[in-house]
Length: 324
Ligand code: PBG
Image 1 (cartoon, helix red, strand yellow):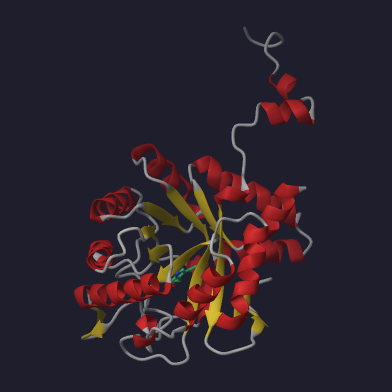
Image 2: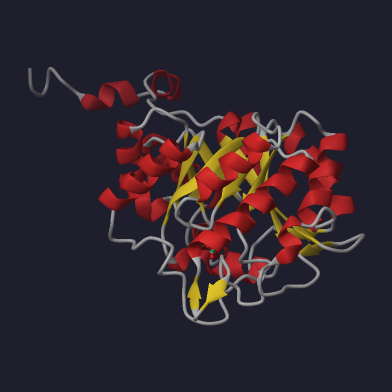
């Protein structure tokens, strides 16, 4: 029955009707809020490359985490900036590293808030690469051992979930084994399974002081052109013991999120990365778009593509909007 029997606009006539037929709804339960923790005391310093983001010292981060929890956001994701870097990135598994301290502080104040910790060496190595270098290349297998040590130290400090973001082969297995062997069978793994070598990480690398000192990350992060390969990466990580998998970045990879959703039944996360965040902020600052409306549209698109979990620097603002 074509027009005029069918009028698609009929179901758009009122806000209530639109609400009733809405296919995708965002919830605060979907969000994870990333936080940057830096060695030191008494610091809460704005990050110049990322609007409304701060470097917190471990003693001040619990307060921020409590605010995140009070908004109903279920989890934070912690990134660490160590006092000093070396070739191996050894501060990554130090008991008193900034992340390890932050985990303990947050768990003391807000035990119900989930803590997810990023597991990767790039913030800790003097080379800025996500692994150890041998003959000018990132050496896969020794790196996996260090990542397992790092994940274990996070578990010992009390993290709920570890999130390896390095893209080494076999690191999920190495981390799962280390956790099992040391009595941390309930610490979950959210693997950055399909992480692309993206230009959209720029503001983050300033914030985390983690830009590579030479070369790029293309020998370990994925080629943006490949979606089938992303599905293989995800499949392998699930086989190795990942409880949840991630696609990163989100916006240029909505098709990958959708294909992953259709193929796998585990929770799928998507990372709305720093460059995506700052593009929107820059356009809003220039008066070109409405920040809140664009933010909600972007987040809804990630959910509609099939993500269960959205890691986003917008989490607090979106949570506030969803409340009203
Ligand atoms: C570390 C890591 C990166 C991001 C998260 N973990 C940067 C990179 O791979 O260079 C990017 C996050 C963002 O851009 O918001 N490996």
